[in-house]
Length: 346
Image 1 (cartoon, helix red, strand yellow):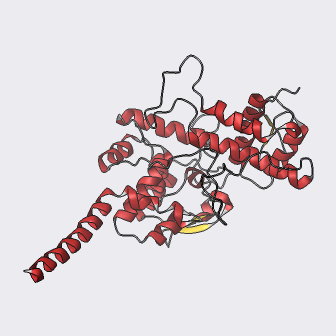
Image 2 (image 1 turned 90 degrees about the horizontal axis):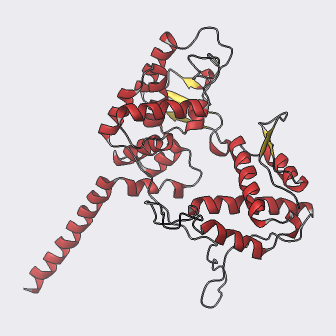
Image 3 (image 1 turned 180 degrees about the vertical axis):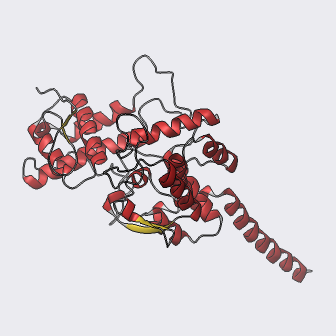
């Protein structure tokens, strides 16, 4: 038997490396390191460590029965807290999204091992047989059935409170990049000086989600705050070309980290008395407001950097005013037709 671990290792080239302690799994992680983003590789390593800790088998001995047992184990409540459930979905086990992510990591590992010839089949089933006769093209039931929840957004008063609680022009510029431009956290932190198109009020996203690039407009308010940050706060003579850097401490002048941005937002939320307001919620707030203001869904897709418009359609439902207006317009048309029909009958 082997004991799975989760270790970060120093690696040359593309990002940090991770190891789980088995040669087949570690070779997969090394392969993933050169083709995936660092956060993806880290999640792969952690999820595979959890999987093999629960299953307790060598990778070549894992079967579909083991995978199904793993899913059941992940969905059970933890021992000693059986009566504790999440308010969001009323479940006691791990969230469906977490279980699905772990299954995706396991499936990716075995897809790699199948191609290499280390195993013959991927033990992660594509789904469960559906009831009724099998038809061509009919999809099987997913192993884990999830519910797509609407993301939370901030109302105007919460936005004002959060922005007012920020203490530096750097912090206000980062928040406005998400609130006014819909940028992701990694995209804000990854901005370089050369990515700023000052005369066009646009920014170039060099390495968005999935490594995709895009050029998006951002409000002039963001660029005005950025100018204040450059003129009064950004240390002179720093060697990095990243826009946002640490302003104090031993890392002064170095690129701001994800943990640093999370700490900035957490402190601002405490001062503002807000229970929520994450980076992703700021992005959701921006894209929702753009859609409510009449921006076409295809334009929202381009602004957000979504590869599929299916990911953007959620903002049709976030705008409660938009849905209500559309319903009233359609309902008035239906009622008008019914009234005309009644008049003709008389």
